[in-house]
Length: 283
Ligand code: DGL
Image (cartoon, rainbow, N blue to C red):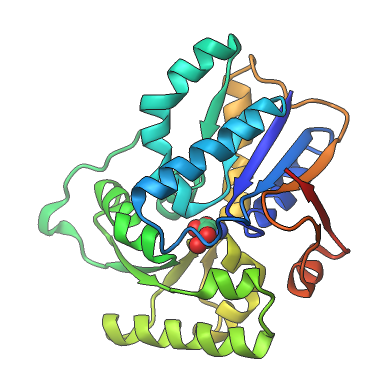
């Protein structure tokens, strides 16, 4: 079987990269829905529909597990698809299939707790509150998934989301590092102004942002820890495969990169992150 990796565009490559390190022999098929990117300003219904079509396409390519390497798709569409669409599709396909996300592993990494763990209410016993900033698309910020789920687990962590409209599009379009640095500095400043000080830690809650993680690190106070979604997702997937031996990761190290948009080479920013030229085929 193959592992499918889905994103609206090139951001999920940051997760793909770590999956290759973790499962070097696995067959991996990447699908970028660049014809419809960015997702971050779209309505919930559109995001659900586009994510369903992306997952369907990867299942049709032979994937059995699809990883939504996209916070926007995972926070808006994943639960809906798992509850309403996947059971019927799985029955029709007649084989075990699943869709996994990126938000749960990130929350586990941010809280240091397994997903099943919900904290006892500590009441007024909280002495120190850790301020966690989340930079994300407007759709992910509007879902409030990080605020809600982290609050259930850690009362000593306060989450502040900063929507960064347009940033994923700029990365997708290969904007210059100077333009990106200026936009990112503006978002970091806006968050710090809202909180009254910079965050103690941060999540880059859009996989595109990991491509320019160094620019976020430069805009935040030196040494601010960043919670890394690609690592957290690769760790979580390794644990998932241990618990689910019905899924095997393949062993031919197949690597395919599909796009619903223009096939061909990806921009220089992506190439610099990837460390080599990268060409996508038509989906
Ligand atoms: N990379 C995506 C995310 O993690 C989506 C960005 C977008 O399409 O707006 O949210």
